[in-house]
Image 1 (cartoon, rainbow, N blue to C red):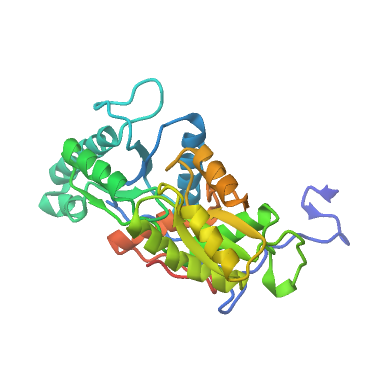
Image 2: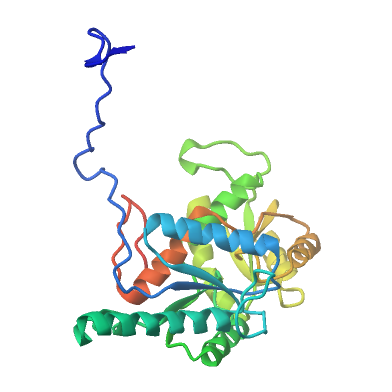
Length: 317
């Protein structure tokens, strides 16, 4: 209760919380620079509402880390050009073409208002930065993305896949712990009766993808203190062979960890591989927050934008 002139005497007054000083202070979020091109997330696979929700959630995470970010979704395997239809699954080439047209219009307005100097801020960057929603390299998908860029006529910069990266190892660890296949926190030494003593790290995209997953696998192995072997889901028998190799080296309780965001392959492929290998499987990485942060870090690195890094978090590549 308070009087017209202020709080009743004797009652505590709520004061603004002071900013925490020193190196542990939470960094102020950066903001997207003026004239920054849009981040276009290139989503592979068959479009559906689940894939759309996943992509939207990842971009929501990216926008929360970089206020003012223009982030859009383009579907790699939608072949219809032009504007998006009523289904809400715009083709990648259509999204890029729209981004190029918007950028040209803004440059024209800026040049008319301020002369060549006003348009320079728009001319210094590409029309868009395309980030493939891939945990590792997949040459077949990348070829389709490049073709979409060419079809759009957009001056885009295409980044590498998201991995390998420590943030992917973190996400894999969390997915395994959610499935009861790993301790959630090694430092606290929680006992998990079903914790795996060997991990098959499943990926798609050929030998290059397996090599990339192997690097992320080493980071995961360091977190869990168990052996991790990469294997290709799209190669007959590869997952079973990796499981046999782990068992021959002493592992008895195996787990399959998909080093995949989710849309890259049919989810039944992972289930079939786990059954063939005789082990339980964790969920794909999906919309885990670190994946969204990695999407943003990949975009920022392409443009030379410096993002605040939380204490102890790995910096962008």
